[in-house]
Image (cartoon, rainbow, N blue to C red; front, side, top):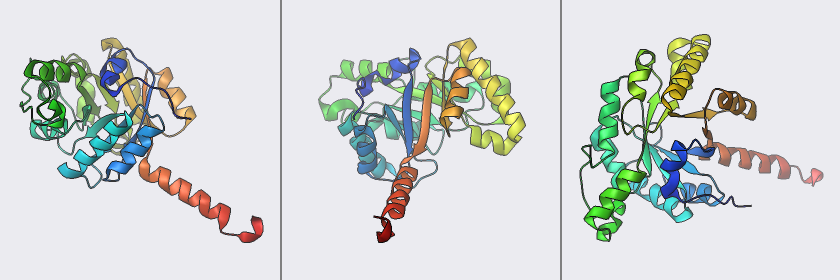
Length: 256
């Protein structure tokens, strides 16, 4: 059964209200994956430009697929630059995940890149974000500044000493806790300490915490630490799991 969910344009406000939201990573560069995932009711998808073979054209298609199914489309950009952020926002991304935000200066840069007023986002009205010229100048700026979601990935040891300063940056909506990179840098035990530190800083600042989880038990533990936005698996894993299950079910005719 398809979940009934609020409009994608409400995603940023839902994060701010600490609503439970559920999404998944998209690794396959096409419109089909985002549209299918959105159609079954996920609140958001994360189009993974950092670790999957997306270019601007395929991000455009993936954002179109998300829009067709009414789900919020976030893009994990490959580089923490204003140009990378502008590129995906212009094609209609609901917001961005920016990797390796390890200081307040970088947090201010990415937050500014997501805003027109009070920021430095470049303006063009002839984009999907501007309804291909259909939006008025004022409506474009107002709606995009209100709806664009800016999420900092906290995944470096250097960020741990600056969490309060990063969280205080205006226009930053959430921390994504990058447990994979933190584990690679710190080891498992220190990573778990770091996660507690990050979630405590998020709670103190009223910041939303987002995290990739591996099981219901993992999700429950992260929820107890204050996370409200959860990412489960990715489209490739969903495809592989379903294909493997069908193969097992049908490969032996004697078992039919």
